[in-house]
Amino acid sequence: MDVCIPQDRAPRDFCVKFPEEIRHDNLAGQLWFGAECLAAGSIIMNRELESMAMRPLAKELTRSLEDVRGALRDQALRDLHTYTEKMREALRHFDVLFAEFELSYVSAMVPVKSPREYYVQQEVIVLFCETVERALDFGYLTQDMIDDYEPALMFTIPRLAIV
Image (tube, rainbow, N blue to C red; front, side, top):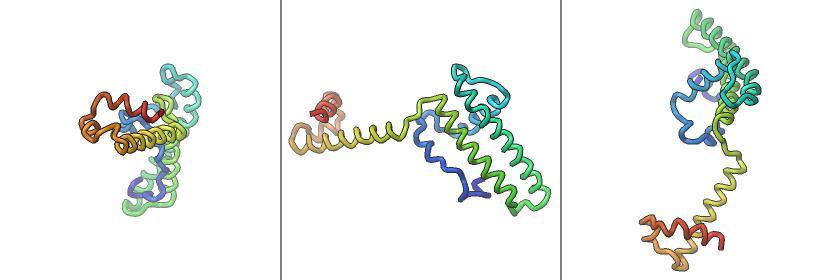
């Protein structure tokens, strides 16, 4: 897909919302395994409602992969160096479905922050940064306390932010 449709890939901006421990190289393989299991009728343990909601998407995703395999097989028998529109369209459709499944599946398995939660977190970060800057200006804190990760400082910054 990176070679055939590099400009037409489905957006994956939502991945920044995933916890760090989820983002790794073999996530796609785990997602594909999950899609095949759901399409075959399995249920994610303790996630029955989410499983039933994702099952149609998982089935469509597995069918889409069959379309991609068929297009690749046809392409391999003709010319390996050109990509037909049929193959590009099959890859685009698969990519969109896979991105949608990725977000659904990961969101069902781990808590994924909403845009509102990220906004609030950024507001708190800015508040703490401004608080530290003002505290330095007024002499409440020293740069050495910050550089040395003074334990008392960890309790002081939130209290100063409240004031």
